[in-house]
Length: 425
Image (cartoon, rainbow, N blue to C red; front, side, top):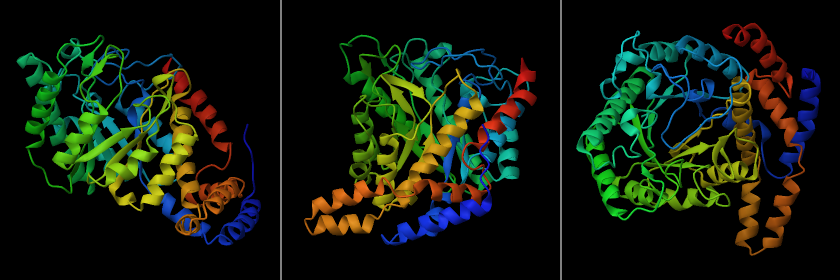
């Protein structure tokens, strides 16, 4: 499967590609530099099927589901970090690593999610510092007996509600500790699956409780240079098909009022609804966005992110908005039916490809044509861009980053599977 392309050939072909883009006023060299510098937060839960370190064997409950049982799942922090490091070596560009709270390492002791502390993530912070890989964080409001009712922060039961509010408060403290340790804010993303399988009689009450609960949680202030708070909506989940408390409309209003970042997940909307148009609309009213790249197939099934039109259009909007400093970019999917390291690598390389394509776009020419009312010219340019020698620039980007070119990474994954993953069975 390995495709060997000599460095000389990559440089020669890139030279022709560079000329083609320069003819449209685009510097391919600059595009490569800018795209490699954009951090992409890669999600830890692809490496172990969203199981965590609390002793569970599978993901259970909470509106989400992972399927498959491909050999070699990471079973502890050491294995997960090792797998992530290997995947990172195959992925060009600046990277971050996103953790869920139940990846705490407690030394074999049972610690409630409402009692977790920064010290339970000391190994992660040491690894982050050593590898220069900043960490992001996520409360885990699912796969827990206290979430069996289908409600957490929006629960009408004061005991359940307090437990989960204490959990999210603890997570914000941990995220701030991450940020202080790594010198860059940790994105702390709050997502919960609260909702109803069938149509509820009271839609307002749970949303009032969620609003008030989030207000209390976010009233605890941490230094802005250590934490970035975000909240994430969802259309529906398993067991919440009819009603989700934290809908897109709820969080649109909440983030605008609270002035925190809104998370847009590409798998959390109607199958024919894309997030690209939402980016510029929301940037007018919130301080920034977190974008999760996934792939819903018929429903939010969290398939590995592909180089799809939806991904490409969203990256175009990220570039065109000129607000990359306000937008955090991450991956969020979990496929247990295929090699997990390959799943990480495919999604992350695709996202970097989509960003590169966007940064190679002759946006200035498109805007000029639009301003002159020459929409035929705009359309023609967009179509011509589709056949520009983009792949030659991608190969050059990988070469610059010291990442495998073309399909060479596939053989590397096969080798890791045989020498490392196979021994876990």
